Length: 332
Image (cartoon, rainbow, N blue to C red; front, side, top):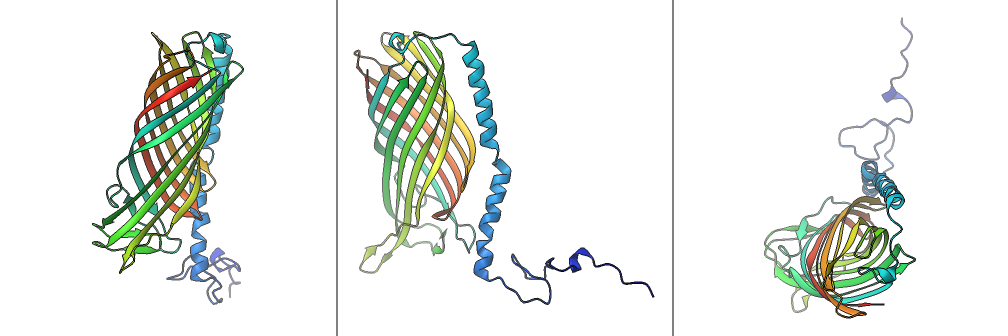
Protein backbone atom coordinates (compact mmCIF):
# COMPACT_ATOMS: atom_id res chain seq x y z
CA UNK A 1 0.00 0.00 0.00
CA UNK A 2 1.35 3.45 -0.95
CA UNK A 3 1.40 6.20 1.64
CA UNK A 4 -1.34 8.78 1.24
CA UNK A 5 -0.40 11.56 -1.18
CA UNK A 6 -0.05 15.08 0.20
CA UNK A 7 -3.07 17.30 -0.09
CA UNK A 8 -3.42 19.22 -3.32
CA UNK A 9 -3.71 23.01 -3.02
CA UNK A 10 -7.44 22.83 -3.64
CA UNK A 11 -7.86 20.42 -0.71
CA UNK A 12 -5.96 22.34 1.92
CA UNK A 13 -7.75 23.99 4.76
CA UNK A 14 -8.68 27.63 4.20
CA UNK A 15 -8.63 27.52 0.35
CA UNK A 16 -12.05 27.94 -1.16
CA UNK A 17 -13.39 25.47 -3.71
CA UNK A 18 -15.70 27.11 -6.22
CA UNK A 19 -18.88 25.12 -6.69
CA UNK A 20 -21.32 25.63 -9.57
CA UNK A 21 -23.37 28.74 -8.91
CA UNK A 22 -21.01 30.11 -6.30
CA UNK A 23 -19.82 33.68 -6.64
CA UNK A 24 -17.80 36.12 -4.58
CA UNK A 25 -17.58 34.89 -1.03
CA UNK A 26 -17.66 31.13 -1.88
CA UNK A 27 -16.52 28.81 0.95
CA UNK A 28 -14.98 25.34 1.02
CA UNK A 29 -17.32 22.44 0.24
CA UNK A 30 -19.13 21.13 3.27
CA UNK A 31 -18.80 24.40 5.21
CA UNK A 32 -21.72 26.71 5.95
CA UNK A 33 -21.92 29.78 3.69
CA UNK A 34 -21.31 32.97 5.62
CA UNK A 35 -21.75 35.54 2.86
CA UNK A 36 -25.04 37.07 1.86
CA UNK A 37 -26.10 38.62 -1.48
CA UNK A 38 -25.70 42.08 0.02
CA UNK A 39 -22.17 41.26 1.15
CA UNK A 40 -21.34 39.89 -2.30
CA UNK A 41 -22.43 43.10 -4.01
CA UNK A 42 -20.44 45.22 -1.59
CA UNK A 43 -17.25 43.41 -2.57
CA UNK A 44 -17.55 44.42 -6.20
CA UNK A 45 -16.60 48.06 -5.67
CA UNK A 46 -13.15 47.65 -4.09
CA UNK A 47 -12.22 45.09 -6.77
CA UNK A 48 -13.27 47.49 -9.51
CA UNK A 49 -11.39 50.30 -7.84
CA UNK A 50 -8.20 48.25 -7.71
CA UNK A 51 -8.49 47.61 -11.46
CA UNK A 52 -8.66 51.36 -12.13
CA UNK A 53 -5.70 52.03 -9.85
CA UNK A 54 -3.60 49.29 -11.46
CA UNK A 55 -4.15 50.83 -14.88
CA UNK A 56 -3.34 54.45 -14.17
CA UNK A 57 -2.33 54.70 -10.54
CA UNK A 58 1.08 56.23 -11.37
CA UNK A 59 0.04 58.23 -14.44
CA UNK A 60 -0.19 61.57 -12.65
CA UNK A 61 3.19 61.08 -11.00
CA UNK A 62 4.84 60.40 -14.36
CA UNK A 63 3.24 63.44 -15.99
CA UNK A 64 4.09 65.68 -13.04
CA UNK A 65 7.72 64.51 -13.17
CA UNK A 66 7.98 65.14 -16.92
CA UNK A 67 6.45 68.61 -16.62
CA UNK A 68 8.73 69.47 -13.69
CA UNK A 69 11.77 68.50 -15.76
CA UNK A 70 10.51 70.57 -18.69
CA UNK A 71 9.95 73.60 -16.48
CA UNK A 72 13.41 73.22 -14.96
CA UNK A 73 14.95 72.95 -18.43
CA UNK A 74 13.15 76.03 -19.75
CA UNK A 75 13.93 77.99 -16.60
CA UNK A 76 17.67 77.38 -16.94
CA UNK A 77 17.70 78.37 -20.61
CA UNK A 78 15.26 81.26 -20.64
CA UNK A 79 16.24 84.86 -20.30
CA UNK A 80 15.72 86.76 -17.08
CA UNK A 81 12.63 88.33 -18.65
CA UNK A 82 11.15 91.78 -18.44
CA UNK A 83 9.22 92.96 -15.43
CA UNK A 84 5.42 92.81 -15.41
CA UNK A 85 5.31 96.62 -15.74
CA UNK A 86 7.36 96.42 -18.96
CA UNK A 87 5.30 93.64 -20.54
CA UNK A 88 2.57 94.36 -23.09
CA UNK A 89 0.85 91.02 -22.45
CA UNK A 90 1.01 90.52 -18.65
CA UNK A 91 -0.57 92.54 -15.83
CA UNK A 92 -0.16 92.30 -12.08
CA UNK A 93 -3.93 91.91 -11.48
CA UNK A 94 -6.50 90.81 -14.07
CA UNK A 95 -10.28 90.58 -13.69
CA UNK A 96 -12.48 89.11 -16.44
CA UNK A 97 -16.29 89.15 -16.43
CA UNK A 98 -18.23 87.87 -19.40
CA UNK A 99 -20.98 85.83 -20.96
CA UNK A 100 -20.31 82.28 -22.14
CA UNK A 101 -22.55 80.83 -24.89
CA UNK A 102 -21.99 77.13 -24.31
CA UNK A 103 -22.55 74.12 -26.52
CA UNK A 104 -23.23 71.14 -24.26
CA UNK A 105 -22.93 67.39 -24.81
CA UNK A 106 -23.66 65.38 -21.66
CA UNK A 107 -23.68 61.62 -21.14
CA UNK A 108 -24.27 59.98 -17.76
CA UNK A 109 -24.39 56.33 -16.73
CA UNK A 110 -25.75 55.66 -13.25
CA UNK A 111 -24.96 52.12 -12.13
CA UNK A 112 -26.65 50.07 -9.45
CA UNK A 113 -24.47 48.68 -6.64
CA UNK A 114 -26.45 45.42 -6.85
CA UNK A 115 -27.83 45.38 -10.41
CA UNK A 116 -24.78 46.18 -12.55
CA UNK A 117 -24.24 48.85 -15.18
CA UNK A 118 -26.98 51.25 -16.13
CA UNK A 119 -27.76 52.78 -19.51
CA UNK A 120 -25.49 55.48 -20.91
CA UNK A 121 -27.97 58.33 -21.21
CA UNK A 122 -27.51 61.37 -23.45
CA UNK A 123 -29.19 64.25 -21.67
CA UNK A 124 -29.65 66.14 -24.93
CA UNK A 125 -30.80 63.23 -27.15
CA UNK A 126 -32.62 60.96 -24.66
CA UNK A 127 -33.97 63.40 -22.07
CA UNK A 128 -34.63 66.48 -24.21
CA UNK A 129 -32.19 68.91 -22.60
CA UNK A 130 -31.17 72.03 -24.54
CA UNK A 131 -27.74 71.67 -26.10
CA UNK A 132 -26.77 75.32 -25.52
CA UNK A 133 -27.02 77.82 -22.69
CA UNK A 134 -25.81 81.32 -21.90
CA UNK A 135 -23.72 81.30 -18.73
CA UNK A 136 -22.09 84.16 -16.77
CA UNK A 137 -18.41 83.52 -16.10
CA UNK A 138 -15.64 85.36 -14.27
CA UNK A 139 -12.00 84.94 -13.27
CA UNK A 140 -9.43 86.81 -11.21
CA UNK A 141 -5.66 86.46 -11.49
CA UNK A 142 -2.56 87.87 -9.84
CA UNK A 143 1.15 87.62 -10.70
CA UNK A 144 3.47 87.19 -7.74
CA UNK A 145 6.98 88.35 -8.49
CA UNK A 146 7.80 88.08 -12.19
CA UNK A 147 6.83 84.53 -13.15
CA UNK A 148 4.23 83.08 -10.79
CA UNK A 149 0.55 83.64 -11.61
CA UNK A 150 -2.42 82.36 -9.61
CA UNK A 151 -5.89 82.45 -11.19
CA UNK A 152 -9.31 81.53 -9.84
CA UNK A 153 -12.56 81.21 -11.79
CA UNK A 154 -16.21 80.24 -11.43
CA UNK A 155 -19.28 79.39 -13.49
CA UNK A 156 -22.35 77.16 -13.15
CA UNK A 157 -25.14 75.67 -15.25
CA UNK A 158 -28.68 74.73 -14.16
CA UNK A 159 -30.81 72.75 -16.59
CA UNK A 160 -34.04 70.74 -16.56
CA UNK A 161 -36.38 69.10 -19.06
CA UNK A 162 -39.52 67.04 -19.59
CA UNK A 163 -39.90 64.52 -22.39
CA UNK A 164 -41.36 61.18 -23.48
CA UNK A 165 -38.80 58.39 -23.54
CA UNK A 166 -38.02 56.82 -26.92
CA UNK A 167 -36.26 53.79 -25.39
CA UNK A 168 -35.95 51.88 -22.12
CA UNK A 169 -33.45 53.33 -19.64
CA UNK A 170 -31.73 51.65 -16.71
CA UNK A 171 -30.99 54.43 -14.20
CA UNK A 172 -29.44 53.21 -10.96
CA UNK A 173 -31.91 50.82 -9.34
CA UNK A 174 -34.78 52.03 -11.51
CA UNK A 175 -36.01 51.11 -14.98
CA UNK A 176 -37.88 53.70 -17.04
CA UNK A 177 -39.80 52.08 -19.94
CA UNK A 178 -40.28 53.47 -23.42
CA UNK A 179 -43.10 55.99 -24.03
CA UNK A 180 -43.28 57.11 -20.39
CA UNK A 181 -43.35 60.83 -19.53
CA UNK A 182 -40.40 61.83 -17.38
CA UNK A 183 -38.74 64.92 -15.98
CA UNK A 184 -35.06 65.45 -15.24
CA UNK A 185 -32.61 68.04 -13.97
CA UNK A 186 -28.85 68.46 -14.20
CA UNK A 187 -26.89 71.11 -12.30
CA UNK A 188 -23.14 71.73 -12.38
CA UNK A 189 -20.91 74.18 -10.56
CA UNK A 190 -17.25 74.68 -11.46
CA UNK A 191 -14.65 76.35 -9.25
CA UNK A 192 -11.11 76.33 -10.59
CA UNK A 193 -7.74 77.34 -9.21
CA UNK A 194 -4.72 77.42 -11.53
CA UNK A 195 -1.02 78.20 -11.24
CA UNK A 196 1.05 79.35 -14.23
CA UNK A 197 4.83 79.51 -14.29
CA UNK A 198 5.89 81.95 -17.04
CA UNK A 199 9.22 80.42 -18.02
CA UNK A 200 9.65 82.88 -20.92
CA UNK A 201 8.79 86.55 -20.77
CA UNK A 202 9.67 89.35 -23.15
CA UNK A 203 8.00 92.68 -23.85
CA UNK A 204 5.61 91.16 -26.41
CA UNK A 205 5.51 87.43 -25.58
CA UNK A 206 4.99 85.19 -22.58
CA UNK A 207 4.95 81.38 -22.42
CA UNK A 208 4.21 79.24 -19.41
CA UNK A 209 3.19 75.89 -17.94
CA UNK A 210 -0.24 75.86 -16.28
CA UNK A 211 -1.48 73.36 -13.73
CA UNK A 212 -4.46 73.41 -11.43
CA UNK A 213 -7.59 71.81 -10.08
CA UNK A 214 -11.22 72.16 -11.12
CA UNK A 215 -13.72 71.36 -8.39
CA UNK A 216 -16.89 70.19 -10.18
CA UNK A 217 -20.11 69.77 -8.17
CA UNK A 218 -22.73 67.61 -9.90
CA UNK A 219 -26.41 67.14 -9.15
CA UNK A 220 -28.85 65.19 -11.31
CA UNK A 221 -32.13 63.29 -11.10
CA UNK A 222 -34.81 61.60 -13.21
CA UNK A 223 -38.48 61.09 -12.23
CA UNK A 224 -41.82 60.05 -13.70
CA UNK A 225 -45.17 61.78 -13.85
CA UNK A 226 -47.64 60.92 -11.06
CA UNK A 227 -51.37 61.07 -11.75
CA UNK A 228 -52.67 64.46 -10.65
CA UNK A 229 -49.32 65.48 -9.14
CA UNK A 230 -47.16 66.30 -12.14
CA UNK A 231 -43.58 65.11 -12.33
CA UNK A 232 -41.65 64.51 -9.12
CA UNK A 233 -37.87 64.35 -9.48
CA UNK A 234 -35.50 63.39 -6.68
CA UNK A 235 -31.74 63.97 -6.63
CA UNK A 236 -30.16 60.66 -7.69
CA UNK A 237 -26.64 62.05 -8.13
CA UNK A 238 -24.95 64.47 -5.75
CA UNK A 239 -21.17 64.46 -5.70
CA UNK A 240 -18.05 66.60 -6.02
CA UNK A 241 -15.45 65.61 -8.61
CA UNK A 242 -11.87 66.94 -8.28
CA UNK A 243 -10.40 67.29 -11.77
CA UNK A 244 -6.68 68.10 -12.20
CA UNK A 245 -5.53 70.12 -15.21
CA UNK A 246 -2.19 70.55 -16.94
CA UNK A 247 -1.31 72.56 -20.02
CA UNK A 248 0.75 75.13 -21.92
CA UNK A 249 -0.16 78.85 -22.01
CA UNK A 250 0.97 81.63 -24.33
CA UNK A 251 0.30 85.37 -24.79
CA UNK A 252 1.45 87.27 -27.88
CA UNK A 253 1.18 90.99 -28.64
CA UNK A 254 -0.23 91.49 -32.16
CA UNK A 255 0.09 95.24 -32.43
CA UNK A 256 -2.41 98.09 -32.15
CA UNK A 257 -3.34 97.00 -28.60
CA UNK A 258 -4.44 93.49 -29.69
CA UNK A 259 -3.17 90.47 -27.71
CA UNK A 260 -3.58 86.78 -28.56
CA UNK A 261 -4.08 84.39 -25.61
CA UNK A 262 -4.14 80.60 -25.66
CA UNK A 263 -4.00 77.51 -23.45
CA UNK A 264 -3.82 73.86 -24.50
CA UNK A 265 -3.94 71.01 -22.01
CA UNK A 266 -4.57 67.31 -21.42
CA UNK A 267 -4.16 64.91 -18.50
CA UNK A 268 -5.05 61.35 -17.48
CA UNK A 269 -5.61 60.96 -13.75
CA UNK A 270 -6.65 58.63 -10.95
CA UNK A 271 -7.77 60.28 -7.71
CA UNK A 272 -9.35 58.00 -5.11
CA UNK A 273 -12.84 57.27 -6.49
CA UNK A 274 -12.33 59.09 -9.80
CA UNK A 275 -10.46 57.84 -12.87
CA UNK A 276 -10.43 59.52 -16.28
CA UNK A 277 -9.11 62.31 -18.45
CA UNK A 278 -9.74 65.94 -19.29
CA UNK A 279 -8.77 67.88 -22.42
CA UNK A 280 -8.86 71.68 -22.66
CA UNK A 281 -8.28 74.29 -25.37
CA UNK A 282 -8.78 78.04 -25.01
CA UNK A 283 -7.97 80.73 -27.58
CA UNK A 284 -8.88 84.39 -27.61
CA UNK A 285 -8.05 87.89 -28.79
CA UNK A 286 -8.17 90.85 -26.44
CA UNK A 287 -8.13 94.56 -27.17
CA UNK A 288 -6.43 96.59 -24.45
CA UNK A 289 -8.60 99.60 -25.24
CA UNK A 290 -7.41 101.69 -22.32
CA UNK A 291 -4.60 101.28 -19.83
CA UNK A 292 -6.81 99.59 -17.26
CA UNK A 293 -9.73 98.33 -19.30
CA UNK A 294 -10.41 96.32 -22.46
CA UNK A 295 -12.52 93.67 -24.15
CA UNK A 296 -12.02 90.14 -25.38
CA UNK A 297 -13.53 87.44 -27.57
CA UNK A 298 -12.56 83.83 -27.01
CA UNK A 299 -13.45 80.24 -27.71
CA UNK A 300 -12.99 77.42 -25.20
CA UNK A 301 -13.37 73.64 -25.31
CA UNK A 302 -13.30 71.26 -22.34
CA UNK A 303 -13.98 67.53 -22.45
CA UNK A 304 -14.39 65.48 -19.26
CA UNK A 305 -14.44 61.66 -19.44
CA UNK A 306 -14.51 60.23 -15.93
CA UNK A 307 -15.42 56.93 -14.28
CA UNK A 308 -16.57 57.38 -10.71
CA UNK A 309 -16.87 54.97 -7.77
CA UNK A 310 -18.19 57.55 -5.32
CA UNK A 311 -20.87 56.39 -2.89
CA UNK A 312 -23.00 59.26 -4.21
CA UNK A 313 -22.35 58.49 -7.87
CA UNK A 314 -21.40 55.07 -9.19
CA UNK A 315 -21.05 55.17 -12.97
CA UNK A 316 -19.59 57.39 -15.69
CA UNK A 317 -19.65 61.12 -16.47
CA UNK A 318 -18.88 62.43 -19.97
CA UNK A 319 -19.30 66.17 -20.37
CA UNK A 320 -18.18 68.40 -23.24
CA UNK A 321 -18.50 72.16 -22.83
CA UNK A 322 -17.54 74.40 -25.73
CA UNK A 323 -18.46 77.81 -26.99
CA UNK A 324 -17.69 81.49 -27.43
CA UNK A 325 -17.16 84.00 -24.66
CA UNK A 326 -17.37 87.79 -24.80
CA UNK A 327 -15.90 89.51 -21.78
CA UNK A 328 -14.75 92.75 -20.27
CA UNK A 329 -11.26 92.89 -18.84
CA UNK A 330 -9.91 95.11 -16.09
CA UNK A 331 -6.19 95.15 -15.30
CA UNK A 332 -3.95 97.07 -12.92
